Every structure is written in C-alpha cells, then in structure tokens.
Length: 103
Image (cartoon, rainbow, N blue to C red; front, side):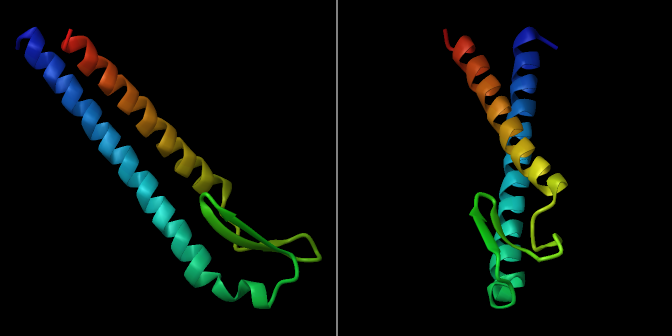
C-alpha cells in the first residue's frame, strides 16, 4: 500500500466518522423534538412550573416535591453534545488534512 492510498483510506474513515457522529446528533435532535412536542405536549396543562428549552428541545415540569417530569437525562444530553463536538472535531481534522494535501 502506498502512502497516498493510506492517506486516502484515513481521510475516508474520517469522513465516515463525521457522517456517523452527525447522524447520531440529528437522530437525537429529532428524538428530543418528538419527546417535547408529542409526548410532553399536554405537560403545560398539568404543571404550574413549566420549563422549555430549544436546544435540544425539552419541555419539563418541576413538581412541588422536587421531582422533575419530562426532562432529558444527563446521558441523553451528554451523547447529544458529545456527538456534536466529535463531528466538529472530525470535520476540522478532515478539512485540515485535505488542505495540507492540496498544497
């Protein structure tokens, strides 16, 4: 295998990682929208202290006893923001490699 084909294979893997991380991010964004807009649509009718967020979508209610209903979990938010950061990092590396090859 030549050096050029090795670099091409590495670049292809990076583009694959960008697509995978972006796919995870978009899937979780759609999932959070469905949860906030469809599953928790009537939450505002039975809750006095309603919290909403738009990135990622969230509609949650804090009860008087301190319990929270409808909020995204920490794991969900971690995977959501982690996949966004990983896609951005892989995209930056892919563009850097491509720019250095074109010189």
